[in-house]
Length: 323
Length: 258
Image (cartoon, rainbow over all chains, first blue to last red; front, top):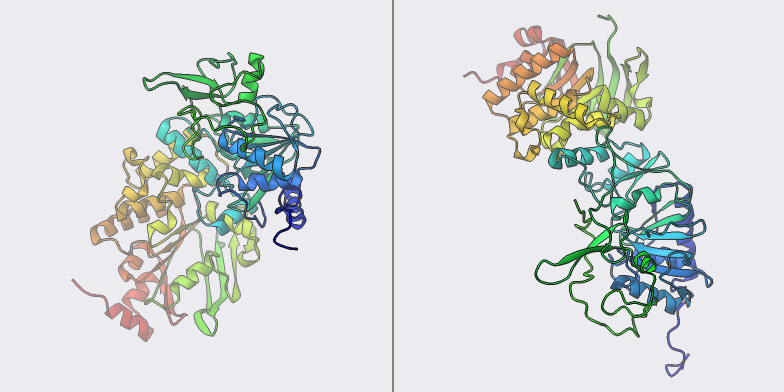
């Protein structure tokens, strides 16, 4: 091997080495066997910072095959930095086909949304999870939270919901809304809006969750009960919106508020860009600014500044609600 | 009333390596009875309390508890899940420092309601009403229900801790220096409150204290500990008025008179 070798550095298929993939697949299988249980795994360094989906990327890399079709969304959108980069990453290291079409994708890696288009058996939804432990903010000790899961002591989860009602008159948790999986484990559905919680219930698709920094993988197998926690006199409700999507007119979908100018102008549009485009019937129309083609490649797509349009908020403090 | 005890402790010992925590402790506790464990610091009172409340496992000896269904269960043979369940339903534990027994970052109402939610109550209105009721019973204003205990004074925190423990109607409460660190007037009110609650609810309690006045006020029976062993036990009035063991005599004569 000489320095002049024409071979530039090459990667194993899908970046991770086979032993690592094997280790992650074991964790995934265990997670599927025990729905909602957080399986520890030896999370690897990935060529991206923590908080950008290192867990999700490792899960995707471990399950992806040459025939898979990958879709990556970030807050429902296919065209945000995170989604474009991860799509480009797998296009490069696994040479798989990528798409923005929910129905065509076999693997959908997502940050904080579940697509509006209903998923089908055989599809895999991979969630990027920042903090997998739903009890963490109430009980900081990992030893204690593990024991609470083991002994099914979940009273504390309701303490949080109680606090919400006491402070706000209703359950004000709008994202990362805790669910009980298959009547046993309480699980953090990752910071998806609670709007998406009902979609997890008995979904025909396999749902995998990867938390890279926290080194946990968990799973919801197809057709598994996923029930949002609530009180008898304050039942679980999803967000509702006063108006339909300003672009496609869709109702009963999750909307994002988009700021239009500096004078308070704004509109509510579908957070799921693929869904919105399909409804408008013209997938080639750029939705905003620099969106040219579906499988945007980071290296070739010119960076078009789209100020204030799709600002990519950190995972804290989201869960917008129109009321 | 039953003539069966609630708790039977026999030959309980706890060693930390070669050091003695407490040694060869035996006693029975009857329903509705308050037992004070007194002694200087380091005498093994807290070790004993922690063993009894299953927060520590003893080195040898047994303790049996009569469950609500009348069955006797040996505490150290129960599974951890059963012990923890007992701990949050039929038992209470009042810590010396309220911050150890409270969740300081959730509201007073949620602190009181936590045990109810832990045993499966899922009705917000009902939980809230119970919390209001219990706050008034421990003399905390209803309008403080949504405040965090961080905003409470030491005495209020201690009363909140008591409410949090008693809300599930436990039959046995462990108290570790419940009045430690409170000033005398607050202490007096708290003792008054405790005495009232214990009598009303027919609680049995084991109170660890180094304060003989607290022991006299609260308990019917007391055990005096020194170096991990019980040196004297009997009715509280008898032990305090007519101490027999030399150490007890020393302890009683050491009380400062005002």
